[in-house]
Image 1 (spheres, rainbow, N blue to C red):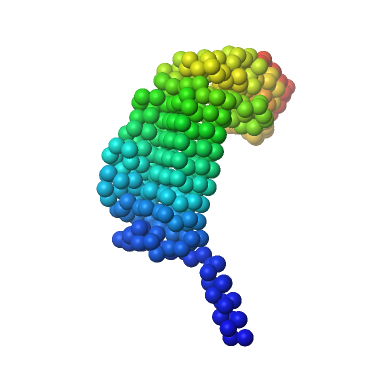
Image 2 (cartoon, rainbow, N blue to C red):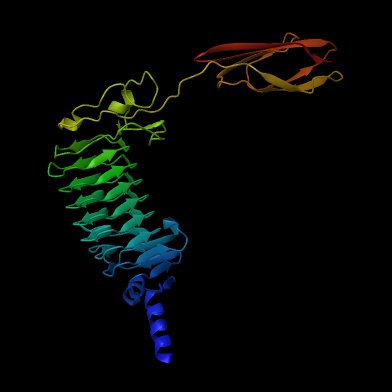
Length: 377
């Protein structure tokens, strides 16, 4: 019986995950080295110095706060990655990685990894922000890569990864896909990068690129085989606020990009024409996005006032209750006075019964409401 209880206790202890707490002044690498698969390493707010190598599987490294701005990992050596992952099922969340500035090194590098999750991190002032090298089935989401010297996010011989909801801003280059197949990029914001915003090489096949906000001067897209730049038109809020998911927003900072100037007569947030021959490639985006401008509906004028009776002098607050989103208001108060603001206050100085009128307008039309003898002074 005692032997059985001991065995059961041993099995239970082997399966239990441990949370390892790291405080400022502690070594994150020491915490990683002492961990076991399934453990969670929680890092308290502060600045830590090091180059962290993770070779164990099934490990989570996260900030306690969930805020990357107060949990900062700075490279001890600029000639090494801030984080180098060489395992599977690793999660990195809520951290800021800075200082891996020498050529080829990254804030977070995944080397021959699979099924890892990199989310809600900031990669700042490295050579590369995030680098997926020979990695498969990983998820990069809600990360911000900014002011990195060469690249924000790089895929090299990486397959079947999901890149979603990330921001690549003010890097040398935004997102670079090299010799990588079967990846999905959606919901990313790529803008104001120096050399180009987005690059996909001719040896990258069957990638899906849709619902991204591209707002960069240069885009370099080679052909590849089986790549697609839009998905089926589907109801849902797209990355620029329109009511349908479709293709991408192809803009330029100076306002001359395709999506900046495309015609959208039916105002569904998708261009009336395809974006053909993207950057000289054979591909087209058949559902390119534009800034959504909802259709205007004719307003219906309505208002209320308080008080509607009293002794002179009487201050009355008028409240516009019109529907249809007016953009213009014209009030007459029955005593020769008028106003053009939405919710005016008017003072009646003399006794009498006053008729009040309101005219409202927008691009779709106008409407008038009049209330005779409405204000009694």
